[in-house]
Image (tube, rainbow, N blue to C red):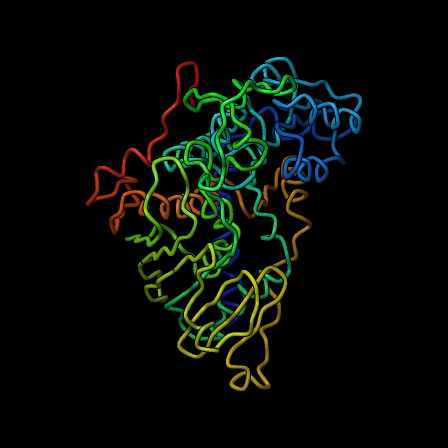
Length: 429
């Protein structure tokens, strides 16, 4: 493919991906505060959430919300003028905001995000965008209908390395790609957590932490981070990391919905996420691109090319296999293989513009009438859905035949209970 043709494709693709942002001109589309800064309410203020808070600190942090009073007090020291809340619903009702940053547990992403969008707020939400596939579709639809500026927290997407990898794939450096592998070593499971029911500590509002999840007693096995290992709140390493790594194949290969998903793993447990998974996705051809198999590995599993000595001993990463060679990548570097076959290879001139920064993209877009976020909720929902489908296939124990148009497992109606969200009384989306 000629680089100039690819550049046009990329620009067209980006415009389509962000199309929802052009449909509606909301009262909050342009900032009207005297300082010209976004008035932001931040939900979740510590750990990963603290990094997001730091990344938007150039704006006007009007309100801070967290269910943990200790985390909230520490954040208040950094932003003494911000009002503090335990319940984001009260924050939305009380404050005049332009935007919200949502960095809560996975199971509360969707309810907070949809509420923010319906309030007319631009939203930055951590990955995965939602806890279930049904929520991902509702969030994407709501974002399109409101026309607000959105960004999912796949921060590595803004890096230069991913851009250069995408350019190599799109310009045919390794030929048509028919196979991709992604792998991470991380493990999230509740198997190794002793669940002792106990009174919640006084600084934690356990009922608000549960949010829409079914009631259960507090246990230190869940908080502050190990919740990822429990189906009720997270989705294991697949939900945690797939949006970061599969972002590269979705971006480079213009992937949409898979047609089938099949998962290998340990025995399925009704409460605990899997300690390891190998998930195979089949995607149909796209234009002139052939069908492609994308395989996810985690918990110590890796593609066979490592054992065969075909790859250097890198950590987590991605491998594209094309008709003319292979492309190995991680967050910060990449390599064309076999190296001898690419001696003297001339790279295409860069044509994907540099990012101003993942959070900065969202801030700038919210302040102007030129929305240019590259991981908006249309794209983020597709990535999230693919990641969650791996867990659905594993928990169902079947090779899922997936109909992307309807969001149904054609051969496994029992998968619906893992696809659809279920909220306790008093919570809705």
